[in-house]
Image 1 (tube, helix red, strand yellow):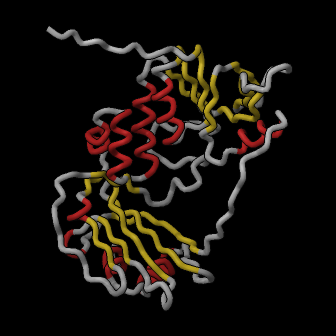
Image 2 (image 1 turned 90 degrees about the vertical axis):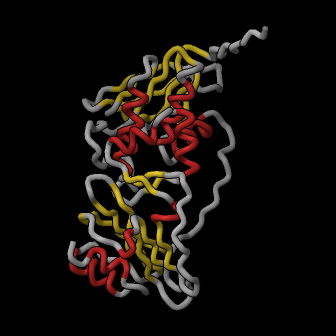
Amino acid sequence: MKRKVVAKIPNLGKRAIVVGAGLGGLSAARVLSDYFDEVMILDRDELPDDAIPRPGVPQGKHAHLLLAGGLKALENLFPNLGNELMRTGAEPIDPGFDILIEDSGRDIWPKIKFGRSTYSMTRPLIERVLRRYVERIENIKVRGGCRAHNIISESKARAATGIQFQMVDGSRETIKSDLIVDASGNGSLTVEFLKSTSRRPPEETSIGVNIRYASALFERSHICDDYKIVSSLPSAREETRGGVIVAAENNINQVVLAGRGKDIPPIDGNEFLSYARQLRTATVYNAIKDA
């Protein structure tokens, strides 16, 4: 008779601090909760109860889609995530059946059911669902309205030993920590800490991007052949405009128009429609013209 042996997870310290309550920060906190007595998440924004965009997520108002690999990775940390997303309104997507890709010079793929789904939703919705998962974990504390200013170290140590942050009322607080994860999005906290401790900052590579895009929400309307996602791509050399439709919660479509170089998509409602009408195909325009 074999006896099952369960390995004990080693405790790595008393407290870990995660800066940033976005998807990266929430996922990191979930992992750290298995190894530390306490995990604290600090975010500069007042975190909303509803699924609404917040200032600390610059791309939060633009269209989002959770790819199958991302869903699988997140469900390893947050079991049943897909069901919870669907319960809160996310749209199930079968990649082989629900996505139309209009690419110049290529035939449209036939509809084939893959038998596995991912989900599309607004960025605020998936963030809210993950945050509620994390908030239910006993040793994780989420604090909004805390703007991290700098990572600190003791005078004789070059290791990070805590973080200083400012609260909404302007007061400052310093909390000691055994581990700090900078999930703030731009890494500036980490870079400044490396400089302050006479360490060489990481090398950076800048890549210029000459594509701009504008997003809008439209009420859900019929798309040809009942597709839920459309990607209308330009012919790369001759054309500069493209468009995307992504279904989301509350019976809405996330619509993105993109332009290259000086061809900048507008944000005015009528001009937005006019721009969509000039895409290589009429699929996007037809789906939103009366919505």
